[in-house]
Structure formats: C-alpha cells, structure tokens
Length: 168
Image (cartoon, rainbow, N blue to C red; front, side, top):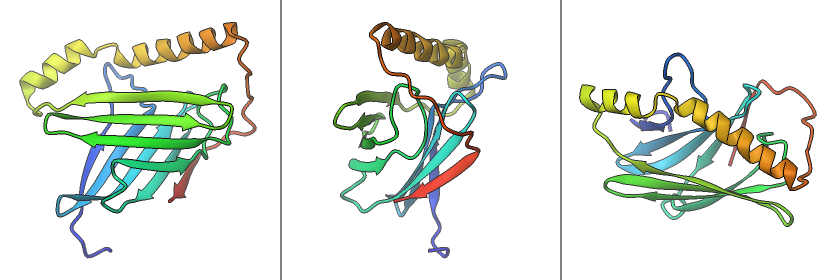
C-alpha cells in the first residue's frame, strides 16, 4: 500500500577504510511497529547480488523460509531451502539462517547487540571492527579449504548474474 508511512530499518556492515563485504543485509520494513516485509540482500564474492522480498504476517517474523535462487557458495547446490529464525530482543537480535536439502546443510547466524548511534560508539566500533570485512573473507576461504580437504564437491557457477529479485 503506497499510502502507508513505512519505517525501514537496515542491518548491514559499514565500510571501513574503503572496504566492505556484506554477505547479507536485511531490511526490516514496518508499519505501526509491526514488521510487514523483510528484504534480504544477499551478495557473493563475485560482486553479484540477489534480493529476496518476503511479505510477512505476525506469525512468520520469527520463523519463515525461502527457496534458494542465487549462487552463493561453490559448495552448495541451488536446490536448497533457506530457513530463517529472527528473535528480536530489547538489547539486540539473533538471526539464524540455515540452508537445507536432503544431502546438504549449512547453519549460520548472527548475534547482534544494539548500540546508540553516537560519536563515541562509532569510534569504538571502528577500532573494534577495522578489519571486519577482511576477517569475513579469510573465514570464507578457510571454510572452503576445510571443505576441499574433506573432499567436498565443487559446483561451478553457470553464468554471470548482475542483479535479480524474487518475491515470496
């Protein structure tokens, strides 16, 4: 409804020293303090992205699922389903994202603590997270090496994707 006055909250990683890698950014679209839509902006290391738009009712903010439509990892096939669990708390939130099929499973998530957006907290977080994007890339490659040593199957990406969207 275009006449509603929506409020949008964004969970993302900021750019530090000109570098950022956001595997996922989440937009919480609310109206009258009720989250009505979630937008998951997923990016891969090929600088491609996919945006999953999810319309919610009050029962599905905590648990919901989406079919995988975007190449993220060479170790995960496309026929997966994402299962999301979002727990909103007074001092933070927990986001769990699991990708599951009959043969594959990936469990991941984030524990987020809320901070006031002020100069002091921005400086503290900049110092704490100065190499955060680099840490993410190192951990991605570390996990890939572990999978290769375990003889994990490598799935080649079929084509270059610019930007695409899916609605659920």
